[in-house]
Structures are given as structure tokens and as C-alpha cells.
Length: 75
Picture 1 (tube, rainbow, N blue to C red):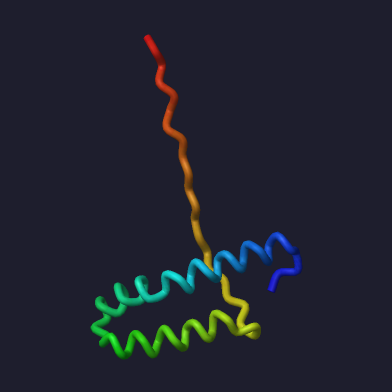
Picture 2: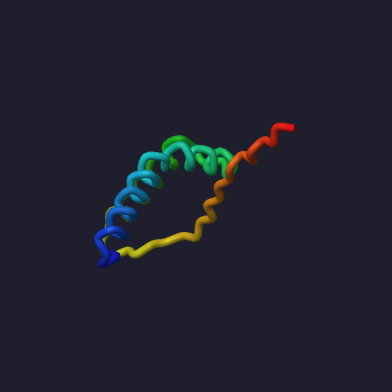
């Protein structure tokens, strides 16, 4: 989807991350919704097909935070 090679590389890694964690995430959500394991399996298969579709240009907002442990002051 992006034209910039660096952005394409980032997108590939993001797609891998989402695809690798789909079942774990969906099992949690499905348990809250009361879905059966079979319903989740069918949903995940469709979701993965859509992730790989070149015709879908999905995105989502994400906040990433990082911090550093404060330096100690020797007194």
C-alpha cells in the first residue's frame, strides 16, 4: 500500500504481528461475546484472508509509549 520502501517494510512487519496474534486476541474477545471455538475459527480464517487482500487498505491508530528509568543520584 505505501510507496516508500521503508514504510512497506514496516507494513510487512505489522501484518506479520497481527496475523501471528490473531487467534489469541480473538479467543479473548470471543469468550466475552460468547462465541464457540468453531465460530472463532471461521471468523479468523476470513479475517486473515482480508488482511492479505491487496484491495483492503486498513489501518488503525496506535499509541506507543516508552520510558527510561531515571538515573540515580549518588548522595
